[in-house]
Length: 339
Image 1 (cartoon, rainbow, N blue to C red):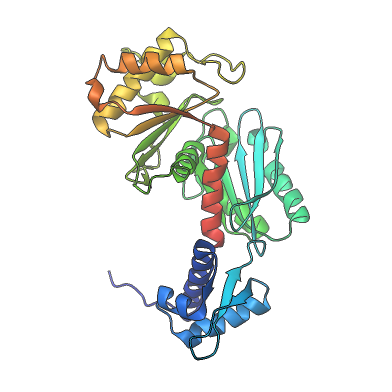
Image 2 (cartoon, one colour):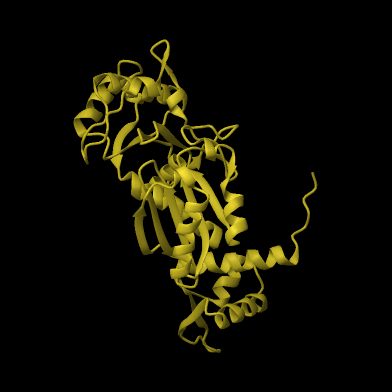
């Protein structure tokens, strides 16, 4: 298939995006540095910078020392020029943050569950945030279900959202670029971005959840969504003859941080799932929500997993702040849309 050449509008967007991302990554840069980094001519970079400066998107933050000629201006991106809104929807509550182009949080809060009326109720929450922060330029929404290109394709217990094009509905209503993502895909993405290593990790993020268990899977740094975007629906993994993982888990109601949500039978179910993940994708780490497990439970799971696969191949078991990771993942997706 022959690729169509980029249109002038496409090229303009690419150059704007390149300048934004480069300035945010480097902190500041001169015209010459941007020209070399982006592979765009000096006059073209100068023209774009002039327009962005007039709009308040960038600012001159100093002058380089002269090397015999005219001193070069050094530019910095204004992180407050655009803001993003991230919202995730859960069975008992909704969480949101407003952030700037550096990912710095400007506002955050929690509200009631919106899953039973995610159309109008979610729109009202968004409208309220936009009234307070009119510079919001992107929306990132997380849901506890499988998502295909912004359409929710599998979300048990919320029939009204089944096959609902949430992305399309929000973009039509607000005219803002929108991404809708599965909760665990966003969480594993957010967790991976918090790691110090520059390697492309392979991770499984396991959450027992308010809506049943789910997993986010990262292989060599890439989120695995699967052929029909059903990857991570581990509740359906067969275990114990006629019981699947969701049935075998026997999760208890949450009682607060540090309270293990699974009993001995559930620990064996988790260990079998980890053994299966080890044999199939061999991840470096399996991450749990710190509100759902304890150190002793993870030690028990590790020991039980070694009954099914050789211990030297088992992943590390870690705990993390699921809510923070989830919002960090949504923030990354929203920033990608903006920048």
